[in-house]
Amino acid sequence: MNLSSNPTQITARITSQVEFRAGDGPLLEIPEGECQVIIDADSAVLTWIEEDQPMTAAIPKIEFDRFIESGAIVLGES
Image 1 (spheres, rainbow, N blue to C red):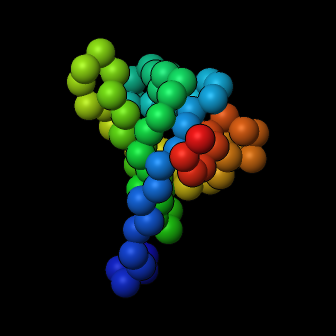
Image 2: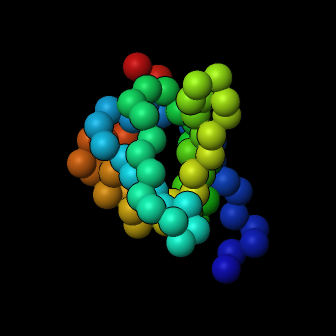
Image 3: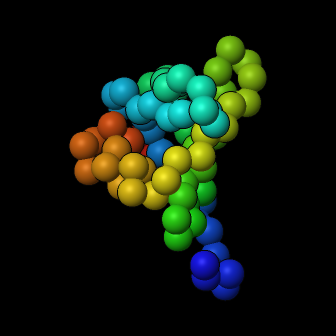
């Protein structure tokens, strides 16, 4: 674990199905639209507003990278 790494926060957009698992529960979907992403060495934390409530999901970096590669998450403002 690299404790000296600095997480990077960027704006992103969900453009198609992005799912995450909250603990041992079922897969939940992040709705399409703008979100904020904090990227660290081993994970990405996404935050967004859903029904006027702030929501957060942490996903492993490898899954986050797959969402980027597939175009489901687009980094930067659109």
